[in-house]
Length: 420
Image (cartoon, rainbow, N blue to C red; front, top):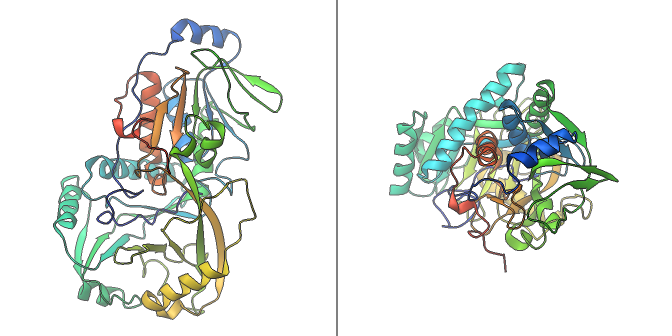
């Protein structure tokens, strides 16, 4: 699972997943052109095959289908499955992005679409618990970010350490002087929202199948077909939104540009009857004064108080070992709880997860046309903060495929260096 997006502090390191939005591939006419598309359709194929039913793939398929494309969505295990970058319980949606206009706007626009998805199904896909960042000291960048958000009409509060301590006495704010509270932000129910969106896509006429796709191969300037489980499938265009599996599918093109890392997530059980750590008494939060950047969520749907460390873990194979937390990871998170959430430091561990970030070198997503195949697109590199942007990313990728979108250069293959 891609990071739960507690969202790193936007004012810390200049390069990381918390970074700003950049660009995408250079758009252009497909070498195959309209005649090739017509030929594929006559052969019973698809306009577009999207491989990967995580948040990027699902929103891409949904947007393409809405624009009249015949779309097939594939996933090896199912939408939002447990090992995907879009599985698990919750992701933070926030617009606190270091005054970066594009990321801020994308998150704000995406929130409206998440609300629409929830309303269509009257389902708790989004939990408006609020999002609180706390900082050790004030800075001009904090004020710039707040000004940008207010210019977009985003509700936001700047708080002193004393105000935070009065409002949330269950948190120890020692050493923290400034807080930024976003009352209309909160938690997206990750697995549920992706599966609900895929169900919408199918109901509207799209096709979804569980199928493991082989490494694509072609000696031509376009990709003629893909294979999997002995089948051959054809389309005019192909989108591979396969998260941490992209380096495996495209070792020469993606390779070290995306590096999955192992991340541990913990859920702790408060004292019986203690509702201080559940909404509405507790928001989602990010400790920007913590060198390791912990983040977490209140107890949602009786799952437990969620906490995780944003620091990148060791390199990780998503098909590798059993997903068990380590004793050291549990000890480290308890030490942090003793500092900021002392009432939870010795409480039982209610549940745990091991997921992965799919890190790019600069914190930007990677979205580009394959350098050899003019009708093949690579979409990934969520780098722990991508989930919230799913709706905006889906619109963006659909625009590139249909020739109506403007490319952003920071997302190109050329802009992403290979990790050393």
